[in-house]
Image 1: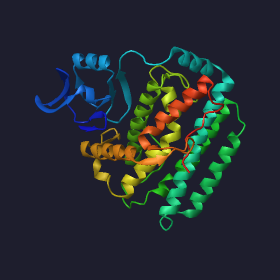
Image 2: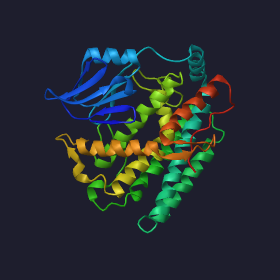
Image 3: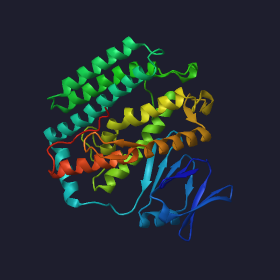
Image 4: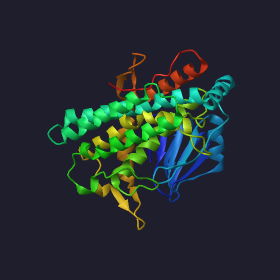
Length: 343
């Protein structure tokens, strides 16, 4: 387990969380390991076989501390939170736009443009940093194809065609993603995207990172008064945070993919940091999870200049800025939603 910034990550299997006074207490085999005042926390994320007392969950809901439960693979299971925050007028405007085919398509297009633009930047970064180790011709060609996908989206207003272009771009990007991996270990190669559960180490790493980013985006949307379940690109489905997944598309490559590549290429994550079950599903070991979470939180503290608002901010605040821009667009305060695309 590790407390970083205002989020407590609990990864040790069999841990028990309870409330004592105004503190969250974590015990393993009935031995107290951590005690944290709840006023220091914004969220608790539990991975795998973690037990949480009803009294702690109720108190967290009252104090605005969100408790999230994920599988060991990082798949979202459920979330315990208090009363819904936000302006009902904003949410009604969001629902109206989600039900309007044209307006919904315009936002879906923006999210996909952000995704493809950042995918091109990730490939360009691999060319710049590892030109002697990668197939430059393949990466350049993939960049050109991705640029063509963005051109196809320029005036597209059909949601299904937008999703089709997104799928095409994803196929192009992941066909050359393995070129960005410079580690020599054959167990750390990428042969295509798979999940639920992931059956290789790179996909396990990607899925885990996507889950962490989705959790943070979901919190950012809630804090701005938006409903994370009412999306524009991803169709509504019970229990799925569709809008959070919409916005995740902008950050998959910029945050998660680049971090996965860095951890593998620098040797911070290695093949023996994973276990393979009898069914072929791949899991990360506890120490690897802690390494990843620590790296993720450090990444969030790095400072960049937001490409649209032209202000410097921590990486971990970008999705809060995007959520605010989305809320302003839905309210009609700005004419368009500017997706996050890193240059």
